[in-house]
Length: 105
Image (cartoon, rainbow, N blue to C red):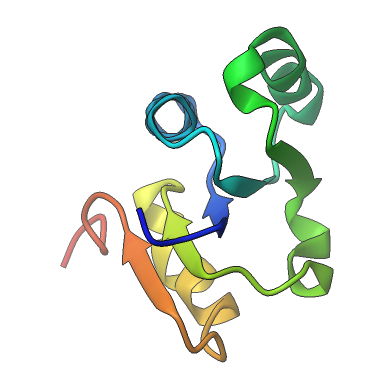
């Protein structure tokens, strides 16, 4: 991966699985994990697994105050994708929206 710093947005079960694979396969990448639910439980995951050594957990409320990443991955609930993408609208790098962009048409 040609990235040194990623912002990962999402905290559900599937997002946690995707992030676990990301940090396992790219241990040198710095990850800002941004989510808004069960932060205490997420912190236990980060602290318990050495693969998360370069991962920092942040409440979604501070998303706009973080250092600018190289890339952003949005793996939040489908219903949140549009609002999460809108929050990143001024970002000039690559953004991956995981799963369907819309939960329905």
